[in-house]
Image (tube, rainbow, N blue to C red; front, side, top):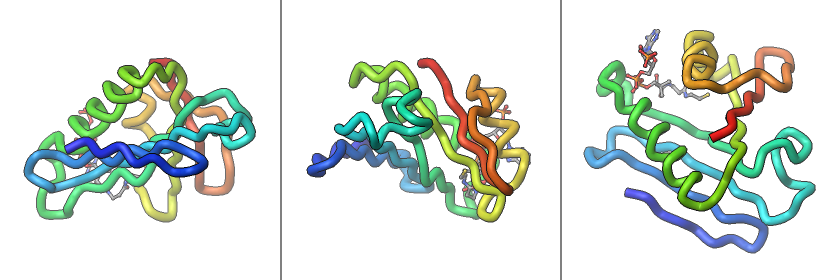
Length: 117
Ligand SMILES: CC(C)(COP(=O)(O)OP(=O)(O)OC[C@H]1O[C@@H](n2cnc3c(N)ncnc32)[C@H](O)[C@@H]1OP(=O)(O)O)[C@@H](O)C(=O)NCCC(=O)NCCS
């Protein structure tokens, strides 16, 4: 399921898999000053989550592919994704890198990565 929400400041997209085991969200701001990575990205992918009972079966992989496909369809060329070590293990950061995301901004236990779609 792909739901587009039209907010005053942005378009937000919610993607869930067909079995409702996980979801991912996308934020596409209208204002240049709200764009992630000081304007280097046009959208932010965030809140990737898969139910614990259904992990390890490529649900996240398919959610990520669906989110990126939808962004391309919307004409978005550059997308950012955030990783936070307080909520997410290090292997997730390495997985994002395998998907083509490159670290742009590093913080304490957190990172923002950029990919050209
Ligand atoms: C991160 C998360 C979404 C992954 O969901 P998932 O459906 O189990 O992931 P997938 O099965 O699609 O696997 C995605 C990749 O991670 C790897 N992976 C999955 N589980 C792993 C594990 N426990 N350890 C190391 N790598 C793992 C897979 O091999 C795959 O990589 P590959 O395609 O290069 O082989 C899930 O663990 C989760 O919801 N975690 C808590 C929230 C979170 O951390 N969200 C990310 C926010 S930044």
